Image (tube, rainbow, N blue to C red):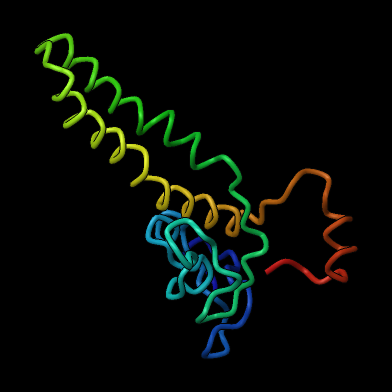
Length: 150
């Protein structure tokens, strides 16, 4: 199967025997869907990555977003929450109980909720881009018997 540009996008055979359709990391990752089939799930719990996809069998051993999700949350999600709390203090000068009642939920919502979609996106991006640590191709071949990565 070819995409719009005529580039082969198949990775392995799908159920119908044809190649898998290449999916964008933004199409599958934030929703916790398998980056290969788009139907299975990446996560077993809130942030726990499954061993493999229950639909297509894709092994998730490649999935290692490390600290990436936390960094993105700190840089892009947490900053608006902290700015909101600081502006609340500057403009309204509320009591401590208001900061606890409003500020704590804002910080929780802006830090915890984005973790799963961001982690899913990073895992899907690793799969689509066949990402691995620099200089580990020989180690990969040694550990996995020269079989190509899915």
